[in-house]
Image (cartoon, rainbow, N blue to C red; front, side, top):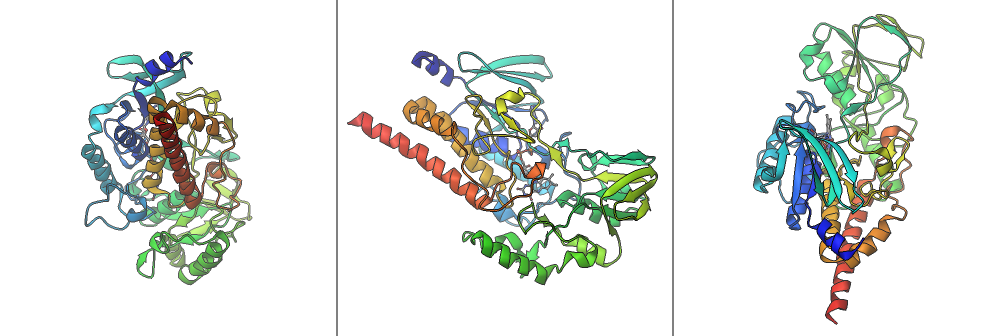
Amino acid sequence: MSPAANFVRSELPVAVIGAGPSGLAAMRALSRQGLAFVGFERHTDVGGLWNIENPASTVYESAHLISSKSTTQFAEFPMPEGTPDYPGHRHLQAYFRSYADRFQLRRSIRFGVRVTAAVPSEDGAWMVSWEGADGPDSGRFSAVIVASGTLHTPAIPTLPGQFSGEIRHSASYKNPRELSGKRVLIVGAGNSGCDLAVDAVHHAASVDISVRRGYYFIPKYVFGRPTDTLNQGKPLPRPLKQFFDKRLLRMFTGDPRRFGFPKPDHRIYESHPVVNSLILHHLGHGDLQVKGDIARLDGHTVHFRDGTSGEYDLLLLATGYVLDYPFLDPALLGWDGPSPSLYLNMFSRQAENLLVIGMVEASGLGWEGRFRQAELAAAYLAAQKRDPESAGEFRQLLAGESPDVTGGYRYLGLDRMSYYVNKDAYRAELEAHLERLASAGSAAREEANR
Ligand SMILES: Cc1cc2nc3c(=O)[nH]c(=O)nc-3n(C[C@H](O)[C@H](O)[C@H](O)COP(=O)(O)OP(=O)(O)OC[C@H]3O[C@@H](n4cnc5c(N)ncnc54)[C@H](O)[C@@H]3O)c2cc1C
């Protein structure tokens, strides 16, 4: 691209799709770099899925953080004094509202506007199309930052047979009163499945939970402190962490097999941990039962692979979500199976200046981790404007192999683990890349001043 075309393109604003935690982080990082942007949010307010009023929200009335506030919040904007250790969605919605106000982000966000397409132009700019109250429209942008979330499109398993009751995905579940008087089977014991099971024991006529594998259950508190605040800042090497934490769990939650769960087929932290000990409490009280994988549906009867069966009115699928970016040609993200293959889970290798913030699953990365992603994205876009040489060096790096961010953990080969990272390894790479961009910039400046 000619320097003139590059100049014209870099004067265009950046499009940010989504005003959830990741989109807000992106907007804040861009504004710190003095880069113009337009935010697009299909709902009428900020907060993403933590805003239960957002029709795309997948939280429910009882949803609270499973990571504690201090490991989750934005570092430059701590939650207000008096916020509980594990705030619920209403606290979080208020928090994101004040974040947007504090950094004056709202004035650059177009609310009630859904992005329908983002297409790269031949001159290197992006053409973004959207639909809002005024009908369809489009505009040119220098770059596209996708922050549209990962937990919106339900993963629906194929269940053999016919069911005469109701089958729903947890994405549409809001209130435990929806379960009143029903014989409920929760399918899946991830974090949502366990929350829903705990809700159900207080309202449903009966509750069972069907699982395919065993899980490690982490309590929210150990030694009277939020569990994820122990050992902060001093990450243990992987083998030691697995050794100690497995024993710590045995002390606090015991062996989940005692409550009917199968033995896990993986070591601790090789799958996303379940932060919930209430389900064990209710299993111990006989309020619900663990069932095996579903073999077949027949009327109101569910037959399980372990040979048992049960009668149900409602199958509530807590079977997770699939990644979905309907406004982008899949070729632009270089999909590799269930997830896009992006450099550092962020940078498209197929399309220049297509970046994704928040397509990262991890235990304990928090919104600050998403903010550091956003800072790297903004630093790269700013370098294109102010320091094209170091931006060019960085671009070459992005074409190569993405660094290993597993931290040495052998993650289970599940779809949702395909974009999983170890938070310490991932944060270290983000910092190293930020450093690299900054030092390339200062080397180029020194050279120019010589
Ligand atoms: C029950 C539950 C508990 C959780 N607990 C934790 C926790 O303890 N700790 C943690 O770190 N994470 C937790 N999460 C994960 C959660 O995904 C993140 O905290 C965070 O919400 C992700 O933010 P995001 O901005 O990437 O996505 P989202 O919050 O999903 O926001 C995406 C936004 O993009 C908008 N959007 C989507 N498509 C378009 C479009 N085409 N045009 C315009 N706007 C669009 C949506 O309306 C939405 O506002 C939890 C999730 C759930 C469901």
